Length: 483
Image (cartoon, rainbow, N blue to C red; front, side, top):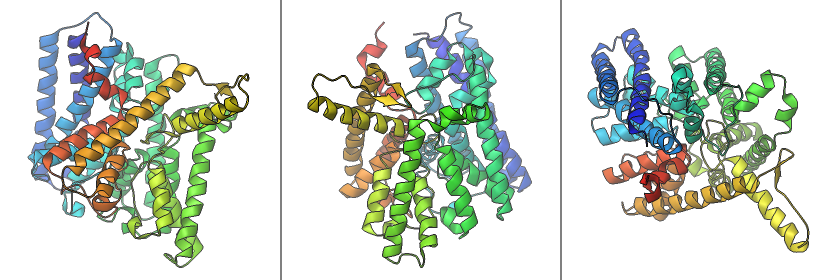
C-alpha cells in the first residue's frame, strides 16, 4: 500500500474539514460568544500544522491510489474528522468529556443523530451550529467534497467515492469524477438554499432555518431545540420538512437526470417507485392507526404526524414531532419495520437501502418461479435492465454482514445492563444511522447513560453504517494487510 500518499490525502481532507470551523467562528462573533473562538481557531491551527508536517515527512508520490489505499484512506479520514471535529466541543467545555464529544461528532458526521446531550438549548449558538454543520458535511460526504475542491484527487477519486457514497453502485454523471463531485454538491447546495428560504417563510430565523436544513438534507436529525421539530407545533414546518426529508432520501443522480432532460429514466426507476410506494403505504397505515386510537383529533392531523414520522424513519433522519413510543402498537411496529429499509442508493439516507431490499425480494420471487419451472431461465431486473449475478452476490454478502453486525452490536450493548429491546433498538438505529429508537433510546431519550466502552463501540458502528459495512470491516481481514 502507498501509505505516504494515504497520509497526504488524509491530511488534506482534515484541513478541509477544519476550515469549515471558520463558519461557527463567524456565528460566535455575531452572537458575541467570543470565549468560544479560541476553541475553533486552536483546532484549525493544529490541523494545519498536522497537514504541513504530513507533507514535509511523506513527500510527493508518483503512484496512484490502489483499491486497498482507498479503503484505508476513507476509514482514517472519517476517524480523523470525528477526532478533530470533537475538539471544539471539548475545548470549549460544552461537552466536558472527550468520549462524549467524539461520540457526538461521529454521530454528526455519520448523520446518525444519536446524542448524549440532555439540554440542547443551553448550548451556545456557535457550538450548535458546528454540531449541525457536521451533519451537512457528512451527508453528501467529506471525500466527495474534497474531490470536488481538489482536482488533484481526481486521480483515484472514483475509488474513494465508491468507498464512501451510500449505496451499492456509484455512477459517473460527467466524464470527470471531479466534475461529478462538484455537480452532486451543487445539487445539495441548491436544495439547502431552497429549504432554508421556505423555513424562514414559516417564521424561523436564519440560524434555525440553516441548522434545521442541515439535519434534514443530510438525513441526520440533530436539532437546536430539545423537542426537535415538535418544538414549533407548526403544520407548515412539518410539511416542508417531510417533503425535503423525502427528497434527501432520493438518489441525487436522479435530480441531475431530471434537470438534463432525462425524465423518462427517472420515472422508470424501480428503486424510486418502490421508495415512494413504501412511504405512501406506511404513512397511510400509521395515520389510520393513530386516528382509530384517537391519538389525534382528526385524520388530517394524524396524517401530518404519521407521514412526518414515516418519512423521518424511512430516510433515517430521526426528527420527531411527538413521542412515538406512546403511539398505538401497529404504528410502532410499522416504524420498526421502516428502520430496516433506509433511503435510496446515492442519497444521504442510511440503512440497508431500498435497491438492496428490492433486488433480494425479486431474487426470492425468481427462485419461486424456478421451483415451478425448473427448465425456465429467469433474471432479476431493475428499471428494465438485468442485474448481474456478481451484484446480487455482493448484495447478499452485504445483508449477511449487516445482520451479523446488528447481532454483535446488540450483544455488546446488552453487556451494559440495558434490557434486550433497548439493546436491539440501539444497535438497529446506530448501524442504520437513524438516531432515535425504542426503550432507553426512544424519541425523548438520549445515549448519555451508556458507559464509555459502549459509546466508543457505537461510534465505530455508526461509521460502519455510514460507510456501508465493507469499507470498515475489510480492514480487519488478514488478506487486506498482505502484499
